[in-house]
Length: 123
Image 1: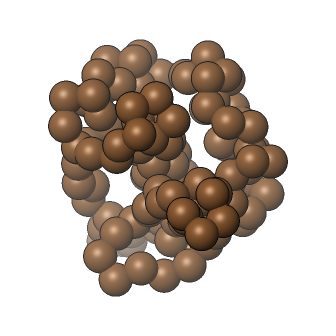
Image 2: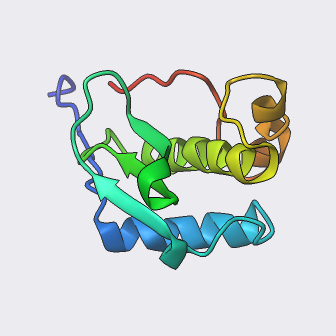
């Protein structure tokens, strides 16, 4: 029957998170972001976000956290890239926003088939 919906969920691991970060850093950000070994990666539930980039002042550490599951790999990559733009903003301008400096990356990411948005459809 044609009502059958195939759902291809994507479940990131710390290893896949580090690997994708490294690839995006190299291909999209031209290696200007810190190496994946300098970033703390976390996978876990959040009530109001698909991902988050945060600066942990007490440990002088940057961290990226994503949800344990995504509707597909494409959304996972888009969320990781989104958080990496925040990381770039922090490293370069000491801020994390959804302002003009954030959106300067929209065209660059689009060239790689990645949508940069403030919000994403998680379903």
